[in-house]
Amino acid sequence: MSELSASWQHRFSLIKQAGGPDLSTMQSLTPGQTCRIWFNFLALLFGPVYYICKGMWRKAVTLTALIALAVFTLMVLAVMLGADQAAMSRIGRYCGPLIFCFRANIDYYKRMVEQDNGWW
Image 1 (cartoon, helix red, strand yellow):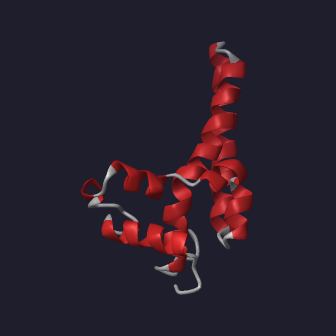
Image 2: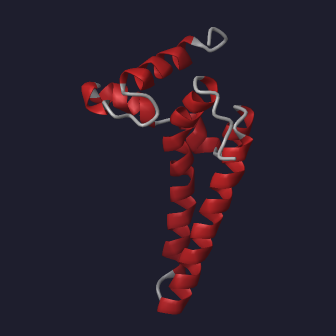
């Protein structure tokens, strides 16, 4: 792990302090430390591209497919129920990047520390 930047080493130490990837002792951290674990701005902006650059292409493909499936399902339900399709589209457009944003640090921790290569 010495090849990681100081910023990533700090994030990883916070994740370890929070109980590892399951974050079982998250309540022991301050709100600022919790935010540092959960939020990744670059993953919010670039989503699957960020994951691929970090070597997590399996999770990038899987999450992108699951998000696309969820958005498609929401759109079908919107048509069937006569709901506002534009609102459903906005939900998909904003929730997708947030999923990458909130999962990126934990997923990268799993890859680098636990040698977890993906979901298969």
